[in-house]
Amino acid sequence: MDRDSGMLNSGVLLINVRKWKNEKLDNKIKKLIGKRKSFIQGDQGILDEIFNGKFLVINPCFNAISSYFELNINDLKIFRKPHIFYNDELIKSAYNTPVVVHFTGTFMNNRPWYAGSSHPYKNKWLKQYKKIFKEEFEPVVHAKSISFYLYKLLPNKLAISILGFLQNNVRPIWFTLKD
Image (tube, rainbow, N blue to C red):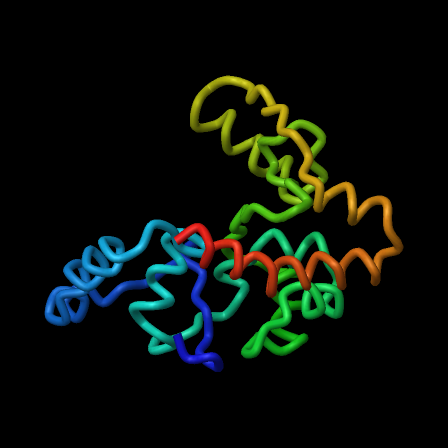
C-alpha cells in the first residue's frame, strides 16, 4: 500500500459488483492470499492492499465504530495515528447520531455481548437480540487483554501513547515476522 492511502473498514461496504467482476477482483484476492500467511486486520488488510486507497469513503455515521464511543477524539487520533481521517465534526456527528453502529473489537473489549460491557448501545443490541431470537442473551465472559489493563492502570495520555505505539509500530512488525 502507498503510505498515504486511506484504510477501509470492511464492516460496512457498498460494492459495485459489476466493476468487481469486470476487474476480476476475486482472482486478485485469491492470488494475494496465496502469497501470504497473515494480514493485518484480516479481510480489511487484504482489501486495503487490493484497492490501495482507491475507494470512496462514506460518512462515519454509517459505520460508527466502537472507538468513537470509547475514546475522545484527541485520544483516538493519538491511538490510531491516522494519515487520513475524518474531521472532528464528522466524528462527533457519528457519535451523537449514528445510523449504523459497528461493534468493532478494540483493546477495551466493549462489545455489547460481553459481560460487563458499558457500550452505550448495549441495551438496544440486547433488545434486538431478544426480538429476533425470542430469548434473553447470556453475556459472554471474555478475558481482558494486557492492553486493557495498561489503559486502566496507567495515566490516560501515557496509556494511549504506549498503546498507539504498539498498534502502529510493533503490530505491523509482528505480522511481517509471522509471514
